Image (cartoon, rainbow, N blue to C red):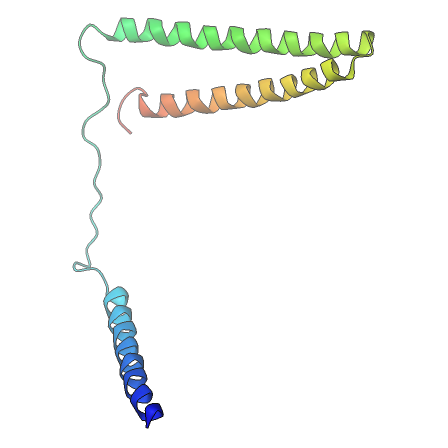
Length: 127
């Protein structure tokens, strides 16, 4: 008798699961409400507030040259560390210098990617 009690709820659960799955398939498989697709284009170009463009240009230029200077200093120090490690037979200095060169290269690549992204966001004119 106990097996009869267990089979009824199991069958009911299986039936409700199948019904839910079929309903989900029907809802998710339905097409969009309207067949026509519309393209939404941005009609507003990004623009600095009045009087701020020269200040924004100055700050951007300072940051660009500062980062370039830091990349150059990092490269020279990393190469110097490799040289000092080789001259004085100090393997840790050479290893850290090699890691520094790798980091400088990754930072330089990231720098160019970030500049490209910023230029595409605040570029001249709407596209």
